[in-house]
Image 1 (cartoon, helix red, strand yellow):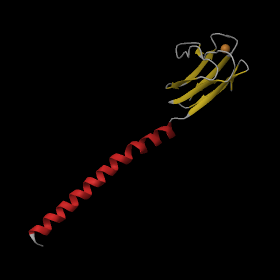
Image 2 (cartoon, rainbow, N blue to C red):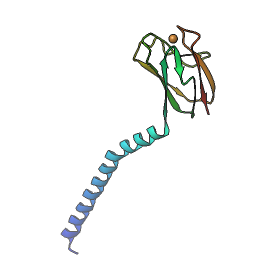
Image 3 (cartoon, helix red, strand yellow):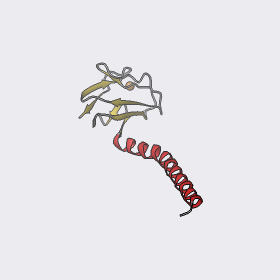
Image 4 (tube, rainbow, N blue to C red):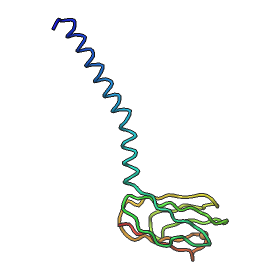
Length: 122
Ligand SMILES: [Cu+2]
């Protein structure tokens, strides 16, 4: 092999390597985002008829719970102990909380304290 053809082969290999690493860079953020969302599920609790529906949900540690206010009045989702407080949720709005630690977490609506629910994290 002549010196110049060895050099052009080297240039070809360098170009291929650059293209490959660019491909990895372009593909990997999408791939990790996809596996991230697959691992972290979202559970929906609908607020309707002055109730949390379902009243009790069980999720895995790291999961998200989303409360959606489908009533035509304001509500909150407020943990009984330390944890979370959505503040006022106007009709059609939602609130999310990530449950990182295991346990049973009871909550209520600060405007209508008779509205209660439980999130169990396993
Ligand atoms: Cu309420």
